[in-house]
Length: 270
Image 1 (cartoon, rainbow, N blue to C red):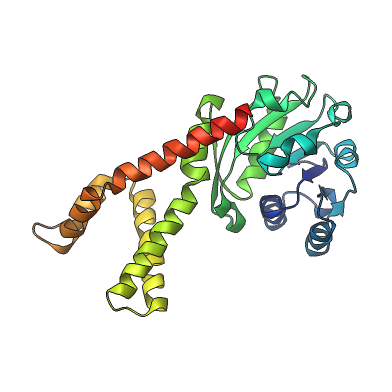
Image 2 (spheres, rainbow, N blue to C red):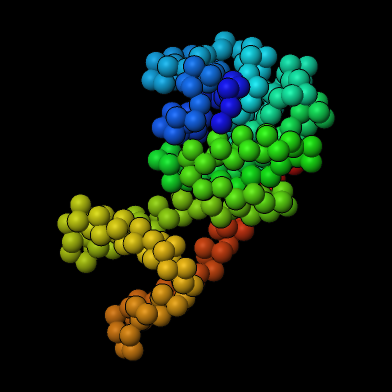
């Protein structure tokens, strides 16, 4: 990929996911990775686990690295990026994985000559099964675009999109895993209610969700068509679907995505 140095401002769960992904792919020497974090204990854990370099301050990390990944919580973004503007040189690439932070807001803390990538990943990145959407600043170079996609591919699939779609991505794939965890929990509880042991019920729920998703991905068939193939006249599945439709489950999921997308817009305007 590159012999350049990659630094992570924020060594939390998401930052570690990318560090772990890069370690597994072998795209970057681990000695070329750096991290900074307000939690010194966390920083020592990252250093000991992955044998990367650590920095005592964000300023030191920015000065040391060619690629800076901002992986902090939205609530701490302003504090983390304050007083760093002069540390960013024109040849640097900044990759932000902070929810709701637009390219325009990033440039409040960066010189106009720095290349920027705004990314919305999701938590399955932790196991290399994530999906990330990325949008680039107008001044992005081809090599910076390539580096960004390589880093993101270390933890899953990548989609390059216009920035106007990023809030919708946040509502769907960014927050979406939580919706599916809720579905798995509900299916597991229902199995127990119907008489199944908890361990068996949860395994059946998990494998059902995984199998259904794999069917859509592998066959490239519309979910409605696959649903109809399971649904026989006067059968068990149509009885269950009738209850779900009457309860407004479909609309509830749509409303959840829209609410999360709206919150992403609000975070970006704070």
